[in-house]
Structure formats: structure tokens, C-alpha cells
Image (cartoon, rainbow, N blue to C red; front, side):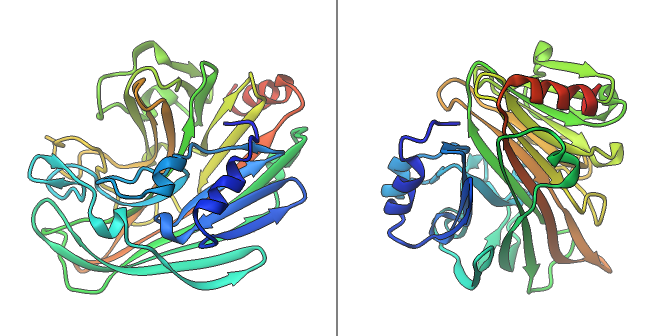
Length: 340
């Protein structure tokens, strides 16, 4: 989370007007069709997301990691992974550099889409339509009761439609969003879920160890960008939301997966998935980087839509809210009431 220093305006300039901007009295939100449909937000003059302006200016890398809030196809790894050619981690050009087209633009909403052929690790090709819709929302009532100085909320509706006939024996696909943030020594992610000790899926990288702390109705994860790690939250545990806070800046983010539990869930992890594609079923994930990236991600995960064994696509609706508090007391009150 960066102080204003013109980051949002620099982003607008570098996209050369190929951006859709939404404004409220205290916030700005940008949807960037040429940057993979990523979303960026500024609240009370503070830039919320991680952004790599150098890559925005020169998007010529094998992976243009612009930052912001992104849409990806799951799974990442395993035998059906979209991010591998053999054993080489790889971002397909249709995801990495192909722009979206604008299909609808209003003062507080927009929709973009593109057609793309995705190839998975097993060699199956999926002819797809990717669509991302965004609209600004009032701050949800259950969040608005906390005394923030400034806030902004938006909902993204993300979908993949599979146009050709592909069976679940050949492929799986789900919409998957990743909101990426800069770390500080004080950034802590959280999840509200009952029975948290049994709700977490640790089958990603090495166990985060003491970075995970359990509370009566949730858990926290110290996401300071100093040790690579990731956890999932099982859809069967019915988690309510994930988020992060930073007491040094009095900023908080909350993300809600609004259609969790609908469809066929599967393992989306970036690993070999030795237990097979159905060895996990998560509706949320939290990623912490190592020091060379110094970022973390709050992720919502969708499910495949299947009819008689044939993939039809995936839909994922996610509400994201940012709040800037006058002091750390507002965040502490939220954590006590929501996580116990």
C-alpha cells in the first residue's frame, strides 16, 4: 500500500487512455483491458495494490506481472495445469499479453471480454470466452458499521465459457482471482471461518509454521513477503471471507467469494498434485512471496460447471472492499468481533 505519490495517475498515463476509471468522493478504481483486465484501487490518496509500472510501460516479459486484481484459469499445476509446458512454468500468451475488448462502459460499471484458446499440461485445447464485469458497490452494511474515514467496494463477475466439447477426463477449468499487494513488516492476512485448524489446506509449498495463528472463529497469516508460502481454505468449511490489515497504515481489505460451493471444485495448486486433481477443493487462498518479490495475494477460487461430463465453463463472483481507518482501533475492533 503506497502513499499517493501519483501512482494512480502514472498508471493512467502509461496505459495511454486504454483504461476505464471509476470515481467516488474518496476513491478511484481502474479496470485495465490491456493489462489482462486487472483492477487497481486508490482510497484516500493511498494506492492499494502492488503495481509494476516499469512492466506496464514495457509489457514484453514472458510473464507480465503487472500487479492489481487479476483473473486466471485454474488449475495452475497438476496434470491439467494451464501454467506448464512439461515441467516448465509458463504463462500462455492469451493470458499474458492478449488484451480484452470493452463491451460495456457505464459511470459505475463495465464489462470486457476476449476469446482465447487455452492449452493445458495434458495437451487438451479449450476454446473459451473470458468475461470480466465490474461494478462499484456501497460498502456492505456489515462492514460499514466500522468507523472508517474512507472506503470503496466493488464486485467482479468473472467467467470462462468453453465453446468446444472437452470432457472432465481431459481438462478442468475454473475462474480464479488474485488481488496482489505490496508487503510491509505489518501486513497480516486473515480468514473468518469456524474450526479454523481443520479448515486450512496446507498442500502448496512448505508449511508456514508460526506465521499461522488460530483465533476462535478464524486465523491470521503473517504475509510480510519474507517467506514463500500459501494456504487454501476448504470450500466445505464454509469460510465467510478473507482479507488483510496493516496497523501501521490503518488500511484493511476484505474479499468475499459470493458463489462459493456451487459447481465442481478441484485442486488448483501450483504443485504436482500427487493425490490427483480432486485432492483439494478450496474457495479461497492466501499467497505470501519470498523477499525478491515482496508481495502477497488474496485469492478467490471458483468451480467448474459440468454437464454430463462435459466442461461448460466457470463463474466466480467476488466482492472486494478497502477501508482506511483513523486509527488501529477500528481494525482491532473488527478482528475481535469477526474472528474472536
